[in-house]
Image (cartoon, rainbow, N blue to C red; front, side):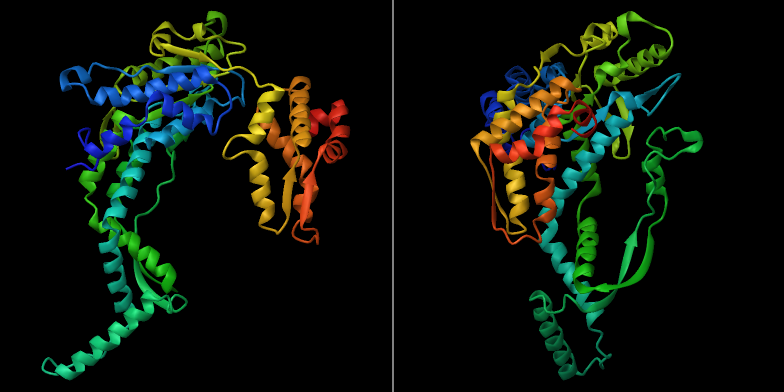
Length: 457
């Protein structure tokens, strides 16, 4: 039986609690603004749970409502999709449409995005299965370690006293092992591993098709050798080996395919890079339209071979994104446009957005720097005036140079704290207050100088 069948009550309860309002509330903890995009993805995720509640005959005809997010770089498009997948514990990959094309010829095989999704799904399922078999795997690994640490002399079959002494010695060794007293001792263990096939390698520079990489990995025999290492290192390797022996690979493959097909999310960035500007169909645009036509059957619904079996893409959720400042969504081929019925526009960020980004998210930059420098014993504090000033500088630089959205805050913060980050391990100071004056002293000159702004910030 699968670990997570659609009818699994625990799975349904978990997804049922993810109402659109709850999803948006979760996204609000990490992404500032962009309410339209959050609502669109929240509804799309909720519809995945709703679909699983339908009768089988109707369920197959309910297709995901794919989304195009339109907006400049650094405003939260990728972060929204990534946080959404993490919230749903769904297989998620991010690809860039421009990687699938070069001028005059196609680049990577478009099917590879689906295979990567299934690989991600398999890793998630394997982790769940490992946790389920962990107690037994730990016991097996412990026995193998004891065999390597203690090799008693062979006793006669009728020598009961000798056997009892050996068992007591082994149990004393087991206790020391469990208490970690043997972690630094060197031991020789047998390690088995499959040869690694480098991702994407092929003859003539073209990527392997039909999941040739997975096929070769299955065909090549495992390589076994004895290695000397510490007990702590050997324990981890043996635990992984024993876990692999205990999990049902067929069950893992079935569950991985089911998760990818029903809950998988593929985020296609830079979709605007493969749009033909103004309907042109010559030069590099021929290649762009070719990639669109290769993408079409994947988004429409097709069957792609993977190392775990055939995977259907009919119910995978596709979220595409792009700036679309040169090309427009209407420059995509009509068939592909029709497969992305939901379109949301993300606005550029203002000074007040930057202020909120620095203060409100659970992983706000100000908190990140406070925690980082605290590891060196330096207590960092940002005043409200300093945060306002940092946001003001970030907005000014985005207006004068190329706008990179919230990523500009990372540039500004790193430049602002460059000196203190360098000196923190050696300074005798225990605290630092970053106020408006400190920000002006370290950034004002850079921001005013046009050339320095362009090349440094």
